[in-house]
Image (cartoon, rainbow, N blue to C red; front, side):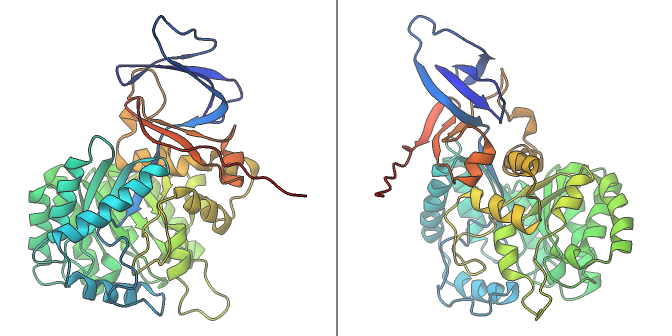
Length: 411
């Protein structure tokens, strides 16, 4: 298959893309169709590697209001609401909702998902269902499963044992939630336990870290120090880190040195955290986002995630990462021309580093022919005009397609 006249990742020159046996075979100018080869003219549209969801909770998706709504809009009431919903979790319930959410993602050009799955459940029902779906959907969607202790590791009965069992069953990554543990001592030990387990089992780690407005929440320094000491480096991701927006600059200067040494990844979730954070503030009211701009300027890898889709923490969402990028640029005050043009990297290349799949990701000869086509010439225009994903191809096969919208103004 030959695709003609594409702008690849904001390039200024049109290129042609040849696909053979499910891989990128050739990329160049003025490639000619071979005998019997299909050819499609992309007419100067933008081609990107597929979008990546760095952080979502598929087990909780599409449950908002069931059995109760989160009326305060806080993280902690969300956890209380989910605790009630967990009482009626079932395998088929999870499978039905996750299948719907994955198809929403596919329609929006996502081909890789890292999902956190609550393992503070003695039956591990959600984890088992997601592990099944990970295998069943592999042809269409790459899914990484993080064993996530929503109610804590040390603060939940047999939390350690449940985490170890989740790993034994096949979780891809180990999680923790230090800011929700009962005490500072529990917080530190939970991170130590999670990262030692990841190191021992050769797994990735993704810590829900300091998702709180409390400047005294310092799980991040522990996670970074252990990642450095254990030699885990970029196998470790810290998600949220919203307490960082309350750290004083003197402490932040000291911390940044450790963060660069540790080489850990960050995931920011602009949609959910601007909704959840700052709830105890009157005015001034904090934005609820980690220091995306400062981290990026210091060469630290940051990606964006949706986090929640219509659940107890976020009452909206349709699986479109464009929304996370759009809001994230506003809240992080990264609205320069180059900032906007390059912002697709938060949900492509940066996210590939987070998921540890960069070696098989990207539009290069020899790599899997995974790509999307947007109805725009560059990402600035795509973001500004909310351009649809016209095609999503995985291993050279079409996963989803759409037609450009036609609008007629009557004056």
